[in-house]
Image 1 (cartoon, rainbow, N blue to C red):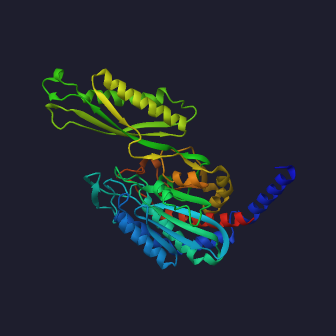
Image 2: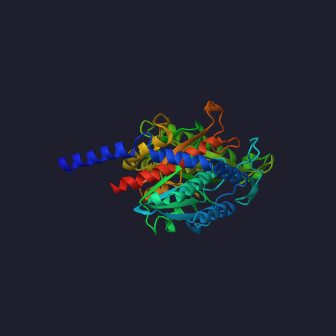
Image 3: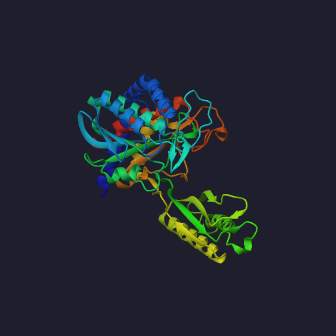
Amino acid sequence: MNIKENLCLLFVLAFFTSTVYGQKNKLTDELNRRASEIESKVIAWRQDIHQNPELGNREVRTAALIAAHLQALGIEVKTGVAVTGVVGILKGAKPGPVIALRADMDALPVEERNNLAFASKVRAQYNGAETAVMHACGHDAHVAILMGVAEVLAAMKNELAGTVKFIFQPAEEGTPKGEEGGAKLMVKEGVLENPKVDVVFGLHMDSMIETGTITYRPAGIMAGVGDFKITVKGKPSHGSQPWLAVDPIPVAAQIVTALQTIVSRNVNLTENAAVVTVGAIHGGNRHNIISEQVELIGNVRAFTEADEQLIYRRIREISEKTAEAAGATALVELPFSVKYPVTFNNVSLTERMLPSLKKAAGAEKVKLIPAKTGSEDFSFFAEKVPGLFFFLGGMPKGQDPKTAGPHHTPEFMLDDSSFKLGVVAFCQLVFDYGKLQKM
């Protein structure tokens, strides 16, 4: 690009910033007004979905609620996408890009311990066992927010440039063993095609960030993740005669302890964070029986493929060699059932759309954050088209984050007043990106 072209580009961006990205404008005011009008509906949807949670690939009731709402708005609807997913297509009156907005629908096998009128009492089957079910990660809010966005944009379609594709995705938290699902299956089934998506936006509630706040990060914002299963096999015996056995329980304990040295001694933590977590151990059923095998399940999180492969290799070496030294064996399945890439925010897109987030929340409420070691299968969408994923605060104002219920716990909770900003932010991104593409 020559000097003349550079100056031209700078002029266009400066003009766009001054005319479209002012901190306050008529569009932002209009979006706030419309979001306020439907705020009570968004809250009611969220509370209803929270009280009736469904696990991954089982979101039948939730999908029906979404489809009925979109159809009532006159939006073209496709159901049964990637098992239970719903996709809505809204065509604006003006030509423009195809913009995808994504919300995940599934709940978690967690028993709620919140004193809420709409607390979940649901129980279901998960991997062959009965479990409590709870929206312990905010996906109920994501769905309700996107339903609200659909209502606002459908009412403003005469002002809309381009097409909006509403992606209501199942199974973000993963599927039962042996099933396909989530964003990966949606991409495989062509959700980013017909019409071809130009850009995708996603948001995630954060129960430990104050309501009214948006947080973001260009490039890698969330880690890639892969889960593992390690099966340690020994030799059983009566509990009174351990010398006749190869006891897999102490072998498994040694493996768990040794795995903790991977991050502290093998990964260069000055460059990137990493996590190795053993989340569950299963072995034995009586005090006087030395069991034949122990199963460990856990996960690995990293921000680069090189770190990920290093950790995978060390898990195999440590597990297999520790077991071999004790006369046992270790079968390592890695990844076992889940493998998500790093959630990557397109750097150029993030820079261009940051003013939109600032208009929605106020510049002082939009904050740059370090990368998170959590993971998201939004990453599969952002692998295929430019994506921007950001966080929306859901903690009541003035609360100490240390007292807020973390994600994936029975105490997880969100402030209902936080959802309106999500509606405004998504709508602002849609309108601003459409205008940007026309310039």
